Image (cartoon, rainbow, N blue to C red; front, side, top):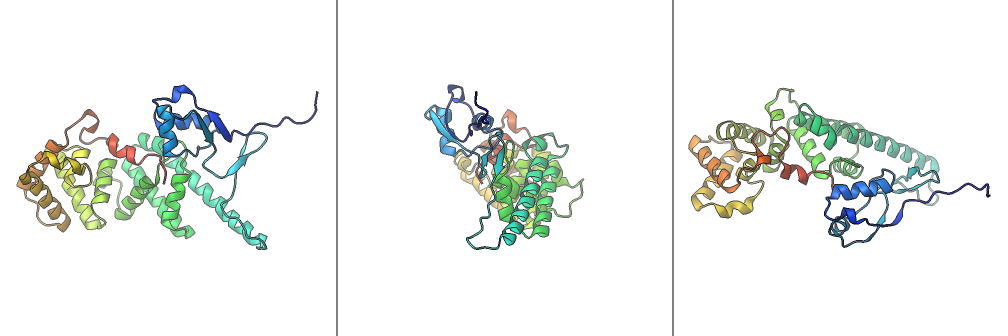
Length: 307
């Protein structure tokens, strides 16, 4: 019997796709791939995921999203992004690798603090979003890293339950809009769908304040759902305008202009907008008003994905 050490086989490579993945969602497919890659997030394109779900792909090449390799013991060693050029001072390269390692540690820690699981169990989910945005900006100011670069890295290193690029951008925009907000600020009582609508509607903070105040009226007095609210402000489902007549479309256009210019909003116009929005976007069980988190359609757009 040989005394030589038995080498483990790296999980990176081609793998048979089991039939049990047909008809499943992307997360189930990724979970199967993670198990093979010993917990590492797989690098799978949207096309490959779709073909696996449809049963069209019988073999797939699996590798971690992060650059690196597996040791003989099956431990994944992540490679550095920075590669020194020939003749470059290695001391300088070491400094850059140290910075990169510290940056990864912060990003991974932040992704553990804010992800789908922590968001869903948060007592105040929107406050958790705001705090995530605050920590992002604090790190940007401390490290000097470009904001967009950090948001991309957060998305790429999100792993299981992590959020995509757009979610990190929304959280950052929320904090920059409400930088001095107190815990009892009205913004923390709405849903992610409402926040997304406000952020999309305008880049001006005073306009966003006006949108939030108007939303409060539409929720309390007219019971609009998150989806209906987004339709009213023109940030979602505009293909459903075809279900309305010209008077209703005209009321929606006037409403959006009044909110953006921050002029007086008449109750009659609010009533017309509420009726038109409810007509165009029918209420469903998952879109009840004042939803604790966010309506499913909006939240699905910002879950884990390619940055």
